[in-house]
Image 1 (cartoon, helix red, strand yellow):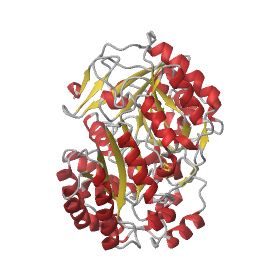
Image 2: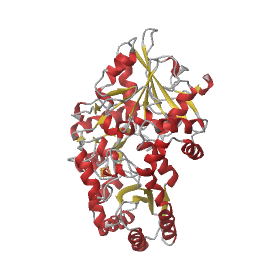
Image 3: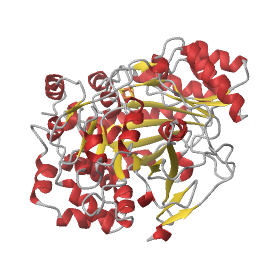
Image 4: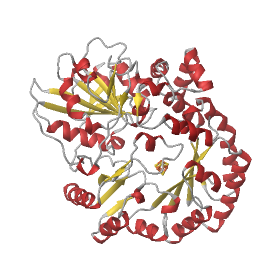
Length: 517
Ligand code: SF4
């Protein structure tokens, strides 16, 4: 079992030299993803520094090597079994499978664990929305944002009856998930700690490249109907430009890389963002900008983003049907999108990536495909093949969004439509990437699951972490699972354990408006 955890120290720019004492509370931070992806998580960066700054506590980092299918310990060859607390960051539902696979190998799965320690606690956007799928897998789930609870969680994990002590915390759900916990969130982002001393290694370039990662905002004011992130992270909060400038200046100095990777669900909704970007340009700091809304992609901004060193622009229209764009929260004019694409081409971007979704209820497939065909022909003036790269996903219904009432099975209906999109794309000069409909379906099955799906996830992990394992586990799943997969929920079970502060009436009314109920 021990070889399942291998020590793999990289030559990093920064590690914390903290001498542990036997009495210290030992906390592991596990990211169920490879090192270069884990580095881009600000939770990983923040938690490592913050936990190590606490008196009498020591933190150890772990990542998952997908090729070798085993855990890499980054600091010491210490089995997670020897810890007091294991924190697991789970931004996406499919990470549950890797996590379960890991916990099974370590004998730390809640269902088979023989002792209380280490307490295994998960957190992140997906479990905050719906912790139920993790009920047989972990001991507890943090509902909301880590900063609000981390210190108390760590010290309580050091107590003798740790699980009971942790269960008393306001936004931590333990054991059977039989009570409702309200989400914790940081009210003033300016006062929240932001990691400056970020670790990385020259041996493995981080996803999104080198540079200081900067969390500009949390949440998003648009609350698009399909977007779980914006609903879970509601309300929209941002750091003031003066605070951001300070973070970037210190980060650039510490990392010795004049580049900032900006994180925001809606960057240009942050007041004075253009001013900040112009300032960075003046100071010779490059910036990587996340995906933006169509109406935010003005000529001036495209020039600015290009001048800041970005070679690929990402825009997220999500639908090409103008009328429907307003219904889902993405109101824009297709002509403006075409104009932005031509302008991006003219000023020398290498690529533009576009995100689209198919399968919105109430939208005819024929109409959708007709618009796609027209759109592709309108791009013919852009002479470079594959300059426009479209990622097309089927609509994946998620909890706490107006589409939460759709059954997971609805995802599979898009299989044929995706094929038709591919056929049309072949006649144009765009590159079309589609998400495998089975993976999208698996995501929906977990996202919309109740406690019964926990066993399916364990069965999946026992059969390997690929799609075959999922199909086999689904065949063996209980009738409870098969029922919601086919029919969905009218009264979603996550309402009975999580309070995100989002009115249920809003979800009902908006679902009706969108023909999703
Ligand atoms: S603009 Fe993007 S991040 Fe914001 S709600 Fe819409 S999809 Fe989500």
